[in-house]
Image 1 (cartoon, helix red, strand yellow):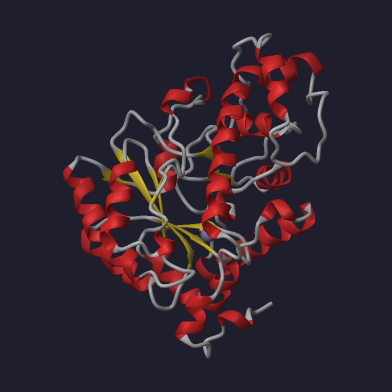
Image 2 (image 1 turned 180 degrees about the vertical axis):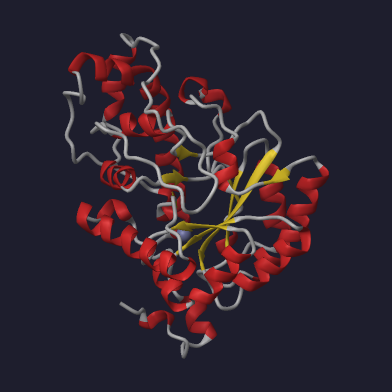
Amino acid sequence: MKSREFGVLMSRQDYENYVLFPRRPYVGTRRSAIIIAFCAILGLVGSLTLSVAFSSTGSRASSGSGSSTISYTTTQWTLTHAITATPQRQPTSGTTTPVLSNSSSTSPITPFPTLLWQEIAALQAQNRFLYYGNQSIPEVALTFDDGPNPYYTQQVLAVLQQYGIKATFFCIGRQVAQYPSLVKQEYAAGNVIGNHTWSHANLTQLSSDTILTQINTTSDAIQQAIGVRPTFFRPPYGVINTNVLTQANQLGLTTIVWNDEARDWTTPGISVISSRILGLAGNGAIILLHDGGGNRSQTVAALPTIITSLQQQGYTFVTLPQMVHDLPQHPASNIAPTSMSIPTSVVY
Ligand code: ZN
């Protein structure tokens, strides 16, 4: 299943013209951000109402379709049921041991809800769906998507090494298959490797089986490269639906979105990238940047300013396993709308 588009004989220009963001990227991402933000709000309400759904049915919620997709039609449901919500804590499984390595796995949540907001809430209750980390701790997580990349990944690694910090790389499976040595370098340097699907597909447009294949083939490639299977997963464009979360849960993956980004893929300029990241940074920030998918020279050049500025402000750079470890054990009841950062809330 080698990708011809990413073949080594491909010209740099062709490579950089490769469309990871196929159509209307800005609008698509903004829409994704709106969807994510909306889902987060639903997830919040869900955290309050989930126990009702469980207790009233004994297992799964009785309403809704198991194949629902991201939609705004759940608002009425939410408003209706939120009124009767009892703020009971979602029961958690006994597996609350912090995940601190690539090789750790998490058991699926069973029974898993069938509505999106319930799924988000159930995952958040076990720290398995994150927009950000602990907002009481001055730590941030750098994440790099869409690699490994033959031009920029090593440049990013060099900067990280220069400042003695670790990051998390969400790799595209076919890139991993093409450049396994780069993933080995990432891992050997103490960074964490996450799953970003095989072909950077919009998973919400795929069947459950295809979603499973997208994720599993990527995990296979990563395991082949570094010897361990990833436990962190980031859906391309940050878009999710019930099928995506169901598969992620079934595979024991922790789904990571973000709350601090610069849209570095639009190559807005080095200073713009750093100022956007610094402007959105805060305790527990999950920072999204890219080491693949196009010309990332601006991203690489912006990194030293981002790193040194945040360090001067007292932030520590951590990998995602550490960030998850530092979260409260039962976070859902602590999440409030006022503390939620919307991934792409800034209008440029
Ligand atoms: Zn991506």
